[in-house]
Length: 144
Image 1 (tube, rainbow, N blue to C red):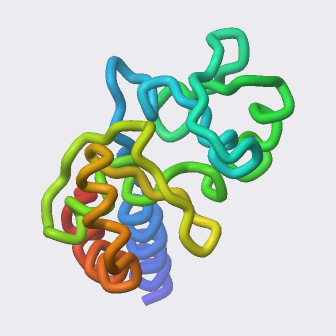
Image 2: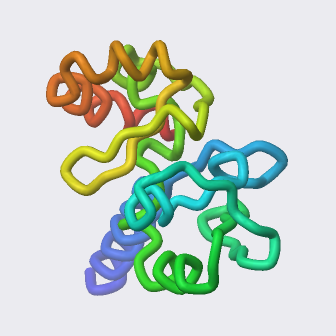
């Protein structure tokens, strides 16, 4: 009985970890097409990162504009990484994955959302609350 409970606990624990791992959209293994995720929050701009300030995280390479931004990311990567694995937030709200343009971005409730292009970003901005709710519901299945 004890072995059964330990096995069940181990299965639930490892399944939970696997289910929560996000697969990030990347081009040639580089997240956000090389843009610095921290810069959206601290510099309020979409800025291309530098090869000299990079790190591997969650299966992708992430680039930064400075050592300070790299250090901030290393301390709290989930705080800065884009939602929905860097896929288009509007697309996720419509129940499909789409790549993104790093220049088409918004921060809502201290979370980074990327969109396919500026035109899609305009549609996204019309009702971010409803779109986030729909995308949140769709993401667990689309993240598999």
